[in-house]
Length: 91
Image 1 (tube, rainbow, N blue to C red):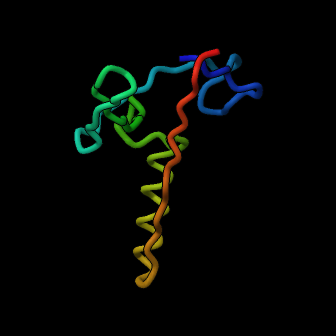
Image 2: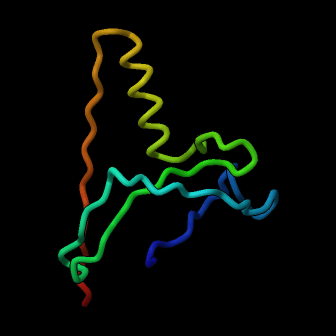
């Protein structure tokens, strides 16, 4: 909620072609609790386009999933990714 907006326009939504609606589908397999936020529950979401129901091309989770599927199709490749969760302290 404190992130700044992108400084360059994105093709998926911008001031010229509008900021379209997207669907965010909750991925129940990502459930966890955030102890530093009073044990608040957290779920990640997958973004899809409402018109087609297909994954949004620029959603990082969808991009990673597509890359993993392409690598597995090669046969001997397996992609592994990590995430660094940063927690800031207020001044």
